[in-house]
Image: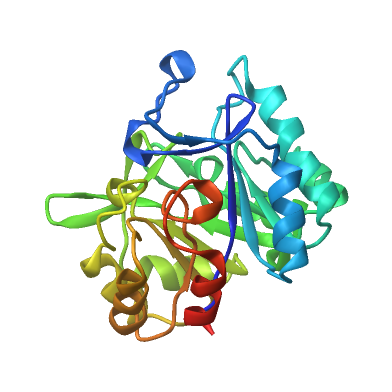
Length: 257
């Protein structure tokens, strides 16, 4: 289980939010933490610790008045730690190369590859052609509905018809280097990991999977290790001391070793 750092950017600032509260309407979100530092500050910390594979996420949609400001924050992170971070948020075949040339090791994509509630494999092929499978991470963040987990898009606001199950993961793994999966209803809550989702993901181990959502204590990390069969990587947001939480980065790194 590897620790994957994160830098979430909303309205031009590094933030930690309650995931399910994010809305395009007015660029609103319930905030757990708003940093006085820019994204590059955190990128330098992760670089100094030798942490690779972190996620820089632009939480504003491309139509937002804040999008360009948030994008510049993301680019500053990539310049501060070239090849050490991945970037996601309104990624398309047209802009993927820009981020890779700016220093991203991978681009993270969700919404673009879904159309009318289903995976659009033609669009997925376009992304692979533009970025290369080895530079592509598919974000399959999900929410529970009728007893199952379904991928959600558009800043986690819109349910698709694609259920998280081994068949979907098997079908998509040939297009991506990794998966990033937030348990959105637990995101920002520090209320514990979503056990059912973690057990499902831990039973499947074809390519690397990073889980996020609900981790609020060191015991939650141990739960993730056990329920995920020590096959999942992990990212922590609001609960981490860098973002105003009580979990110390150094201890998290020790546990994840």
